[in-house]
Length: 195
Image (tube, rainbow, N blue to C red):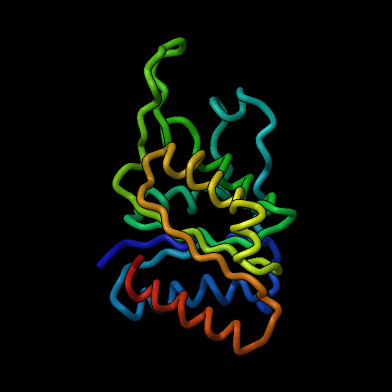
């Protein structure tokens, strides 16, 4: 059994959003299978953007971000769900990541001016990225080369030691209720397996 953090990055707090059902399907199935689960829903949280290097290095992490940091540190496996907005993750999730993945939490840089690579502080954790979109997932992969997902995986998760990273790309989310139900069942199967 694993300790799993599920980060629901959909910024719309409406419970009718399919994205919240996706995150809940994973979390509920994981719990039912015996995994320990902590859920973090970002919708409705006031997470300020970082505006300077000084803020990033010296200011305290906002209170709205601390539960997410705690869940990431606690977890063996981290699930990030987000809808593709304008080709990327929503600004709220980006702000959360910038605030949460601070020095001495995600990376340790050592002395200023050191030529050594930063130490990856989140080693030993795996992740799954679940991304929903209106376009076909195949088109996103082939034409856009999954750029948002690849950037998140390479430049944030693996950079900080989170590896392996697997993905679930859910295309055509508005196609039909049957299509959505099939995806909820697939995501629940990943939750039950803890992968």
